[in-house]
Image (cartoon, rainbow, N blue to C red):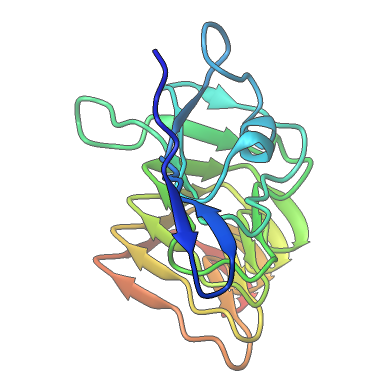
Length: 199
């Protein structure tokens, strides 16, 4: 089917401009039968506004997951109890998530378990001068020198709603470690059984 191309003549300048409309896409990631098997590959293929939809399984990416500054949503699914059933696992070998390219609130993470991450700074998630949105996410079993579950560096103001930090450990900030000039917003949160030498 051929669709007409709309051209608008700009008489004053003698230029022509074609009007286009971008539409957001849903990109699926799972072990079999989806668009991608790798979350980072799906991110590479995504554009602002896209949703990366995960299945109810455990993802071993082999490296930290980085949205690369894109305004996208990484969305998991819920089990029958309404708990996150999409698990991002660092296998004790690397940090699970990082936002380090000035991500703002339009970069969103939903319905995820972030577990078994390990790094010097933030085993679960590191926000470096970035302020993503997290909804209904659970951080568990992560470890670091600073910020077992999450570390927020200067000028990071993430927004967290309905998130749980449990059984994370660090030298400083077992659940979450906030540097100076950080202003995280937490609503309906739970911190339990986290441990640290300080904080």
